[in-house]
Amino acid sequence: MTQLATAQDRTVHIDLYARLARESRVERAPWLDELRRAAMGRFEQVGFPSRTDEEWRFTDISPITKTQFKLAERVPDEVATDAAASFSFGTDAVSELVFVNGHFAPGLSRIGKLPRGVKVGRLSDAINEQGDLVEKNLARLADIEKNPFVALNTGFLSDGAFLHFARGTVVDQPIHLLFVSAKGADLSVSHPRVLVIAEENVQATIVESYVGGGAGVYFTNAVTEIVAGPGSHIDHCKLQQESLDANHVATMQVRLGRDATFVSHSATIGAKLTRNDLNCHMAGQGAYATLNGLVLVGGNQHCDNHTLLDHAEPNCPSHELYKHVLSGKSTAVFKGKILVRQPAQKTDSKQTSKTLLLSDDSTMNSQPALEIYADDVKCTHGSTTGPVDEDMVFYLRSRGVGLEAAKHLLSYAFAADITRRIKVEPVRRRLEDFMAAQHGLPQDLRITNLGAFDEAVQT
Image (cartoon, rainbow, N blue to C red; front, side, top):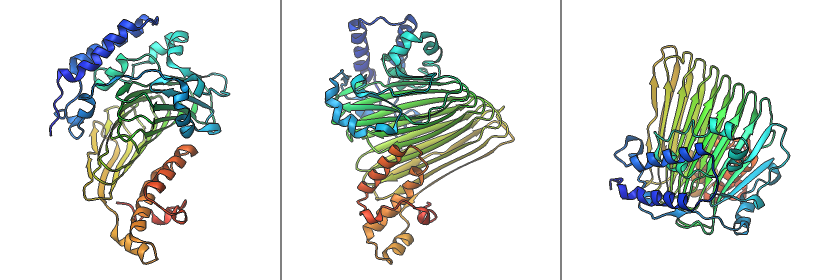
């Protein structure tokens, strides 16, 4: 069925904004109020996208547009204590900021001992204390004109996470941003916002986790902006493990300065409806980007990943690998684009999408694309989709492995090609445990060295 967006679809969010504006008693910076008004004006003008839009034609967002969501309300920290503890990194993270139903939970958060020059905290506090810096960077990358979900998020912008790394700072352990949708989030919407500013020669690892801690149907609309200064190295992980009845839409905008490096690991294993937009703008010579993605969905889940590698300057290599494992009646979309602008000579970019179908009812739509305006470049892209290799199944069965265990083991190895690239141990461990449990692997088949299977499971 074709989805048609109507004016009524956006009314509930416009009404929520109007009520919030009337009831709010918090003093805000004038520039922030103007930004929010402009964003909601844009959303009111364009509304939600429909499947007549090329960028959305494979994703039906009617579960979002047809639901009368309410704004997620603040709940006592105790409501999410168990969920936060379950997904916490503990001492594996130097800092851990916890947000419950979109609201900062100071009692569950821990700043930790950070190097001098590193600021980690609430975005609302940063607006009050470092207003000029925030105003200069907030909503500068995530464009309200191009994406209505970004406009909606910006319209409700009030709190979130703020990370600022001064020049030359190095943070050895990950900084964990944990967004928990706990009890009380049913039929509600939250708009998490993350702003990361890394100045010159910064090294840091950031993890965003979005998890369901007891809530049912809800809507998370997240926006992350990352500014990576010259010579900086940012390793970013995103783990989406929302409730299986949830809707998750996220936009990440990254800008890389000269010789900056950005490595992204994005994993989707939760939510009924997921849409991820990841746009990386290589704005300085010698910038380097790696985008790795893993999608593990089943049942009636749907995941749509859109990526853009925007090469604007010369000598900017990039590599992208997304893998999907689909079972049941699940569906997935991958639309990856490599854009090489005319000044971006000597670009070397490679994009690959691979999908493993574990059932005849699962569906994959893959659309890799190149748009090149420079003449001295080397760019490749490829996409493959197929079932488990029957020859490898036979090979394993001939050595005493059962049929189902053989199929599960091969799909486990296929996905592990991504997980073992992740340097953050808690993220890698959670994904490995999820795959092992999902595929029902006995302990003696949960192998850690999967190199022997690599060639066999390449589809």
